[in-house]
Length: 319
Image 1: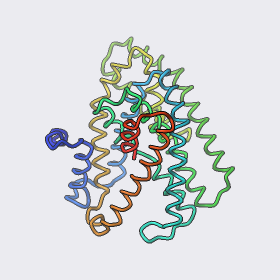
Image 2 (image 1 turned 120 degrees about the vertical axis):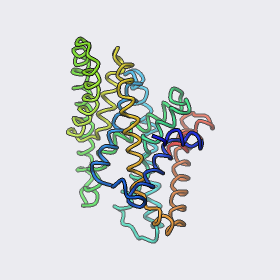
Image 3 (image 1 turned 60 degrees about the vertical axis):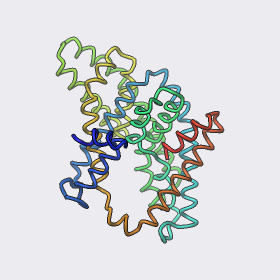
């Protein structure tokens, strides 16, 4: 309850406040918050509602614009950053280790991704969401969210030495799955809310909004995607309806509370004593990763016609 007011008093973003509280009450601190699957899943709902809410801000016309940026800037950023990080890991090693090509690829994939849960609130807080900076950032995050589930499937295949054909097949299945989610949602969602609105029951409307966000997430998982991708797709499909404003208002309290839980569970996984023991390695890796990602994304954005200020802000934010 006190995290947000205290964060504003200290002039830091609330996300850092929630992470700090997670460290304090986690296993490495007071031990009040564990790393149980229940804690993690509860926090994951916060990200799901965040992506659902972001989808509500995107009518299909704007979503088409995001898709074009995702296919160019977003894809370029992921590929170049993955290759750059994997190359450095394979040639130089990390923390004295001698990684294989497969493990270098995995580290590269993970390092290329950014956190929607961290970036989107910062965009909103600074009023950048509606400008070119916000649109391009959302496009990159959208592509990365779409890639999370396929990567979770591809990584074991890479580790086991599967050929490229098997990897491509998995990616094509994921693309087809996303198409199925969109097709099913476009037929069902509008009609569902029309029926619910006729009941004139606020409780039913709120329950339906929550059910749609979670239900589309589950459907996406069945199709080989992440649940946040399904929730985002549901938001996009409902953005063009008359119920958008009411749905956003209804889910906002759940989104804020659960997102706070997510960042506290993330903080609870940190071990300050280990970080202090290996502080030189930690600082070197963090700074190196930020510099590398900032440089790669900055070059891609500059080549795409963004201003120096936009390149600087977006590169640092997504790194």
